[in-house]
Every structure is written in C-alpha cells, then in structure tokens.
Length: 330
Picture 1 (tube, rainbow, N blue to C red):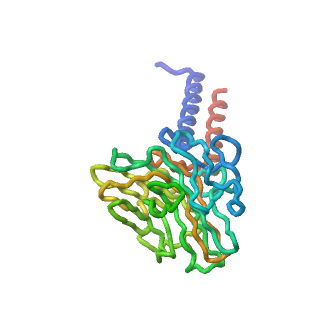
Picture 2: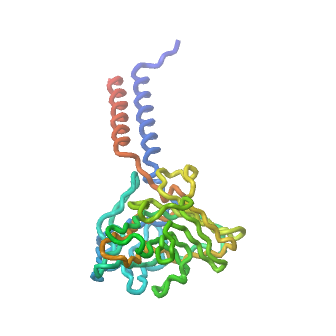
Picture 3: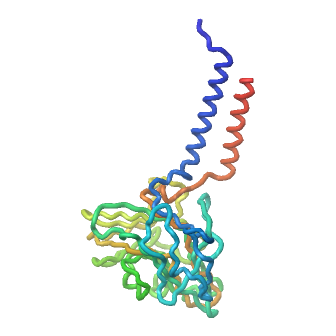
C-alpha cells in the first residue's frame, strides 16, 4: 500500500497553512488596496506635497481654501483649483473627521465664527469635463464625511443654511442660481429637516432624508454620505443618497433619499465643500467636510477597514497555525 513520507506530509501541511493564511489576509485587506476604479481621493492633507493644502484660517484670510489647487490623485479628475464665492472664505484646518471603521488622514474644511456672530463660507471645484448633460449613460459615486455642526448656545430657530452643494457653472459670483444638487437644511426658507434637492431646466424635485425628521439637532456629529449619480439619456437622471453605511456592499443599504430629473438634463460642473451661512450669534459650531472620494462603484468610495481587535486576533491565529505546522515538521 502506498504511503506518503511523514516529512512530505508535514511539508505539504505547512505550505497549505501558509497559502490559506495568505489567501485569508488578502481577502480581508482587499478593500484597502483594490481601488482600480477610484477616480480621486482628497483627504485635505496638510503639508508641502503636490496633493496637500496649506494650513489656513478664514477669520484672518490666511491660506484660505479658494485658490488652492492640489494635484488630484490617482487620476486628473479636476480641471482647476477651488473657487471662493465672494467673501465667503473657508480654510483647511488640522484635525480630520472620524467615522467608525473608515480610514482618515489630513485635515478638514471648515469655517470660523467671526465678528462674534457669524460663520459664512462656500467654495466650488471644477470637475474636468463635468458630469451628465444627456450625453452618455454613466453611473458615478462620491463619498465624503460631513459634520453639519450645531447651534451651541445660539437660537436653534434662527441659524440660516448648512449644506453640501453641487453646481452647473461656478465662477464665484452668485452661485445660488447655478445650484443643481443640494443636501441642506435652511431655516431661512423654513426647511428644518434635511433634504436632497435636484434642480435642472425642467424644474426642482426634492426628498427629505429618511422621509423626514432629521434636523440639525439630531444630525449632530460626523456622518458618512455616499452619493450615487445615475446619468441616463434614454430615461431619467437619478441622484441617490446613502447615509451612514457601515460596509462596502451597496445592496445592503437602502438610500435615505432618491430624486430624479425626468428629462435627463442634470449637469454637474463643480462640487462644493460645505456651505455655511449662520448669523445667529457667536455660540454655534460651523460645519466641516472631509475625506472626499469619487469612484465608479460603491465599494470604491467606501474603503472600510477591519476593527483593530479583529486584525490582532487574525494575526495571532495565523502565527499560531504556522508555528504548529513548523513544530510538527521539526
């Protein structure tokens, strides 16, 4: 009867264990490295590298966001640098926003409370070639972290607007008339629940996030937002918003809002950071914006990482398996 030599059996077991461990590690770490369709990642890094920003302070006008033009990575996604709207400056400051299991680095975009009363800021950055316009079918995703701030000691019924915005045309002057997608709450116009609105030549449509009830008070803290833009010349353009997903599988999540442009006439030339217009006093905290990603799939823009405890247990288990195989071989 044929039998396998003991040393050969142990050698095979060791190779199998190594291969299994390597495969498992590759599978778990795949979200960290598999970004073939990631179009741009902007963590608002601070430093002197081509993709970095200068540390700024909009209250003093030092190194404001407008005019800065970091090199987009990994593709040349942008046509130009950030454009400031009038005197509404913003700046990149130290301290990244944090969301569970989501990678972060660099700083964040925000505004300062000025004149003991106010925060106001708006900037836009041009996307090379733009998106949509009834040309060819395309689906593209964007994710970002946002903290809409809070009213602190200010009057909660008199704060103004806080939003993330997208435009069709943006030269820094009167951008309100060029606003095409708006994620916002705005007490100026009596909108106290967060809405997603889409405006095209055909008109404006909107939906409240989760059907309503999400206001500035109960949306406090950092949120992960994933935008899905479906451009379809033969049907309608659709914008879907996913709020606070915790994994990279799109089918696991139901959009918090979906809005359509029935005539396929949505065109986005610029995206903004946050828009802050708060004149209620000096006790509020302005919004912040961070960790921008654009990609061709939901997974590209949601690179969740395993919990540190899970990684530690995995490493210990793998090391133990290899050690047992070596011991048996010896």
